[in-house]
Length: 194
Ligand SMILES: [Zn+2]
Image (cartoon, rainbow, N blue to C red; front, side, top):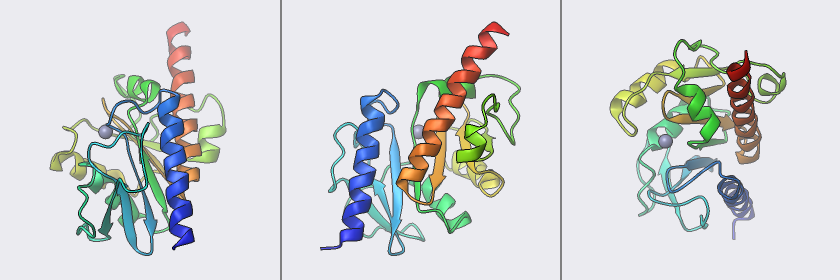
């Protein structure tokens, strides 16, 4: 029994359940990944964060070749490009959380730092968030746009789609994603009254 892998799976499942229970990852559109022994473990296609289990992960090598029989989330190339561009990354989270998506639909956002820092916590927990122009989810065009910015920023917001957040491990990615969503919520509320 690999205790390190078990711990990573336990944490990933806790994060998925927590995000689902609090309405930050609805339906089956969210996905997450982590690295273990030079392999990427990513939630399988069609899985739901609310019911995620340890046997619902596809395993791939760092060139994107399948390592088990599970079909990965169709957004797996986004995850792989983060791990390839930033080798110290241990996990990546992607959701369609409401306030980040609302903010991503506004015109004239700063592409190199798209979430205003009304509080210091997003910069402390994550850093700058780059805006990725809209392309169809799962398309090669989206992956190409993402790759252009992946080295430039610490996290990313896919326009009209949702955030992609890395961390040294899944808990760090979770804390950063929570801060991104809170910052987008605060910015959204403030822009209604200013
Ligand atoms: Zn998505």
